[in-house]
Image 1 (tube, rainbow, N blue to C red):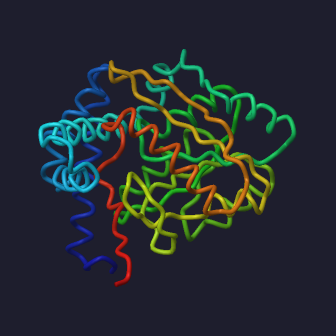
Image 2: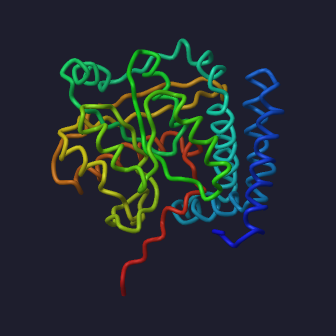
Length: 294
């Protein structure tokens, strides 16, 4: 049995049961209260117990040593709150859809997207763990766009099962990274629209500056876009001050060119969003594992 045998399996089942119980209880509450409590649980309970708060503070100290400690703590707390809200939102499909009913995607990429659809051209949306990264896909799906994606499977197979169901319910088919990557590529090759989150550590990536520090970054989005002539559109779901509503920004296309240049531009777009709303990025990521030789 994988991951440590029977003990690990029992722990995975217990974790899944606890998560399902939390989701069931919160699901009975009115949507605004449900989302707010999801944020509170993440910042007050899950974050501290799971070590997420400690990790977020360490990352913030690495990237922003010039910030007062009080500011780093405030951003870490708000980042955990955003994480909890995002989790509950994405498990509240119908309620989230109603909340987003009047949210209209805006930005220079909207017209480019419409042109790509009319021409039957593949589109690759790129984004990061910022705001609620599923909100743009959901809003565009409401306008008739069918957008699939790719995801990293969770180690806990029980949690992963309903997590994937939740992702798949938004729009197009989602594929597991590695085992199902060929499905993702096939969809893009056929002129489909797909989304990918590129802000995670990739041991096979190239070192690029991210928030001032070198981080191993995948070049897959650029490689795929060049191979299948896909339009590359960064998009973001930016949480508003009330904690419930969003602005959806579809940015100007990333020009095709050398893969490294394309990834630098995608990274720059994400960095700009984080600079404007630092608490909306997932600071718990183990993003800066890269250590130059020597």
